[in-house]
Image 1 (cartoon, rainbow, N blue to C red):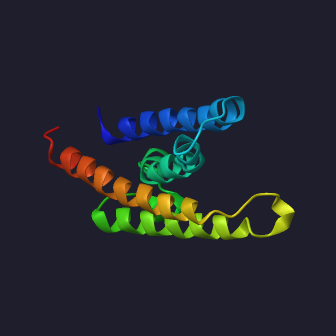
Image 2 (tube, rainbow, N blue to C red):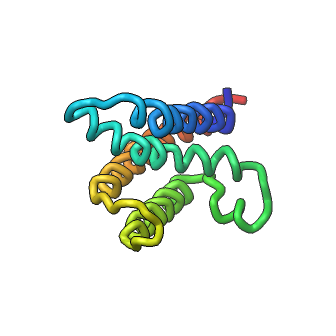
Length: 136
């Protein structure tokens, strides 16, 4: 299986897990700590982990402007996508301080989004090396 296929199925599976947590588990079941805390940060952790995989799935093999900017072909591109993704996550979290949106700011979301992106950087980088070195 090539990296684009792995990325596709990772993003689909991750999105289903995130939706399951947000729509089914958190509203229908009440857990004590630490499970309540984990279910609060899990969508951010999983979502940030999936950023490089999503970029690979959506933008590899394409040639329009946005795809050229987010295409992951080397470790520099991966680093750029991860840093830009983290920047967008931080901006999104700070926008939640504006009361119009009706959301709550949580510094743990930023912390665990960063942890998810760092983990994803190493996992995706390792997969990228493996599939670049593999004979065709």
